[in-house]
Amino acid sequence: MAWFEREFIAVPEQHKNQLIYKWPDPSIRRFSRAVVNADEIALFVKSGQLIATMGPGRHRIDADELPILGALVDTLTGGNFYRAELYFVSTREFPGIKFGGRLADIADPVSEQVLTLRAFGEFALSVRDPAELITTLAGTADLGTASALPGWAAEFLLKSMKIAVTQGISRGEWPVLGLSAHLEAIETAVLRQTNLTLYEYGLRITRMGNFDITPAPEDADRLKRLAKDTTYIRLTGDFQRYAAGELALGAGQGLARGVTDTGFLGATMGLSAIQQHTNNWTTRSAAPPADTAPPRVCTGCRTHNQADARFCMSCGTELAAHRCRHCAAALPGTANFCHSCGKPSTSE
Image (cartoon, rainbow, N blue to C red):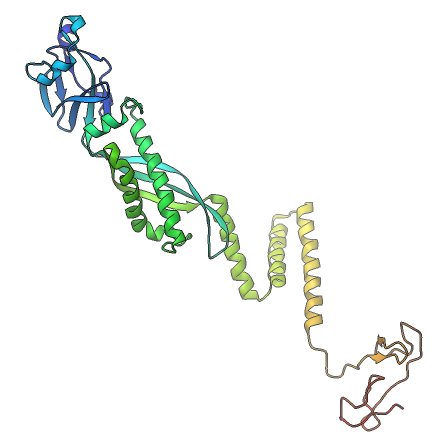
């Protein structure tokens, strides 16, 4: 019974989820029975060359049934064994293969920020040409590992997505922010780019699903803060008022939590300083009242002094009062005409 079981060659149950399964023994006994499932094709390969193929069904491995196997006869065994690599290639589609990683650093023309884009999702992979796949990759990739081909295809997909997305953004077709609204167009461009590369390997990605392209978490947080700051500054009218409001909000939250550490005290002091600066700026920028007296100009050194000054704060010269003889309005010492009534002025 053990000898009889050894004569059957088929893909083990635990390996049926692989695109390619390589029979581990290159010495295949003559008259062995090969079982090829409906969604498989079997290929004999020797020295990187395809020798024979077997479609779905039960096949007796014998040169009488497959004459081309005569090239595989091992003469050292008296013709009882064939020497070749036997591959079982699945012809069905394999969905749900995951991919993901960093795409590229992109400059956002709207926010003028440099963002790192990342992509994550799934895709479906299938074999386009089993013979081309085996002869192209045999000896260069570990075809016996279940994750080898899907992982290799995922790297190609990520690389193609980087090219397609970068080109689309540089041409202005897709915005950096809001790429999720253009996933259908991105999928079409990425599949075209990827399958151009995979074609020569006998593979193709049939479709993508559940994928998204987003900025890195730290970049997303930075953009959210920037958007909030820009909106608030536009609403308040200037940065000082916005900064004072932000500090006041932080101070209120600190008081609500009962915080008394140096960070909260520093924020409170910063609030006071900004508020004082805002008040000073507002005072300086406000128009002076109409009844404010003009400064008194020293006739000796031309220094501007306060309106009620009696002596020059620069040279000490006594300041004479200058008033209009018609309306008695206070005038600078150098005034020739009254700024109130417009008539020639003279000093008292």
